[in-house]
Amino acid sequence: MADLKLSRLPDRTPVKLTITVMPDLKKSLDAYLTLYQTVHEDRDAGLGDIIPAMLEHFLAADRAFAKAQKRADAP
Image (cartoon, rainbow, N blue to C red; front, top):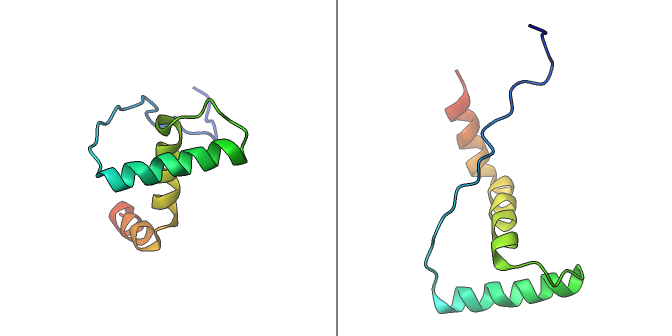
């Protein structure tokens, strides 16, 4: 078997989550979506499209979380 530099890709099977949010958060998410659609001229985008990206960006920007993850992954 060839020794490839690219290792096996992680599981990319989507996982569906169902959450309940307060009305104020839903209103803010709807307002953000409207602004997103305007700025990016993408009327087809929905909350199901942008919320995963928002969560990914949030987690990537949280330095304390990144440090904790590094410690957890360390041998």
